[in-house]
Length: 143
Figure 1: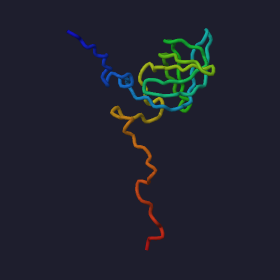
Figure 2 (figure 1 turned 45 degrees about the vertical axis):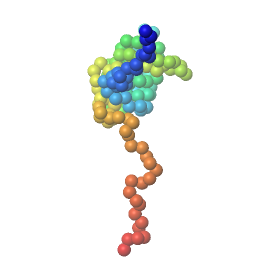
Figure 3 (figure 1 turned 60 degrees about the vertical axis):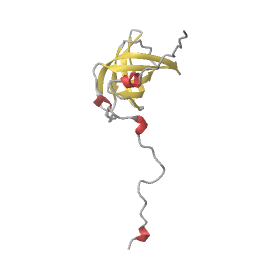
Figure 4 (figure 1 turned 180 degrees about the vertical axis):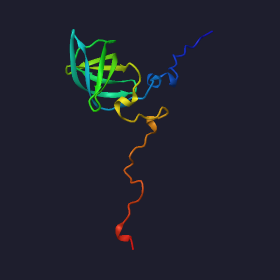
C-alpha cells in the first residue's frame, strides 16, 4: 500500500492577517507629534505616519523606544493627544525605525479622515479609464 502525502493546504482566505484586522488601514502620510520617554529622558519628536487606522498607526521614529512602551500621539491639526502602546518595532533605516502604535481605545475620529466601509474590497475600486464619464458638450453646436 502506498500513501500519497498531500502538501499542507494554505489557510482559508478568511484567515489571512489583513482580514483579521479590526479596522481598515489607510496608507497616508500625516504629520504627528510623538511624546514619550527614551533612555530615561522625555522626548517630543515630529514624525509622519505611513498608515493609519481607527486603532493606531504605523510611523517612522528616530527616538529609541521599546515594544510595549507607552507614548502619546498628538494630531497637530487638532491638538488632540491620545495615549498609545508600541506594538511593533520594524527595520531601522536612515536613523529612524518603523514603529506600530495602538491607541488605548479605538479612535477613528482622531485622524479626521473617512475610512472605507467594513465590506470595502480594494480590488473593486474604480480606476481612471482615461475616458470622460460622459461625452463633452460642444458649445458651437448649441442653437
